[in-house]
Image (cartoon, rainbow, N blue to C red; front, side, top):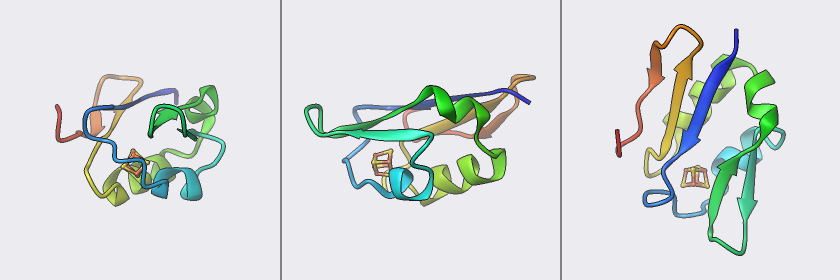
Length: 77
Ligand code: SF4
């Protein structure tokens, strides 16, 4: 099942937790000071994506299933 993953750049503090958990799905952009989802996020295990989202210290990650179900909402909505 394809998912949609986004990171609110206003909330991300660049902690790198998501990158350590799923290096194929997230990349820490040192130049921007935030993480961004990679194309590989679409192929990542949904459970791990949701785990990364819950583990984000600022709840910046939003994960939406292919059917539109919000699996994890970010604090930015
Ligand atoms: S875990 Fe959250 S705050 Fe840390 S880099 Fe990833 S999105 Fe940003």
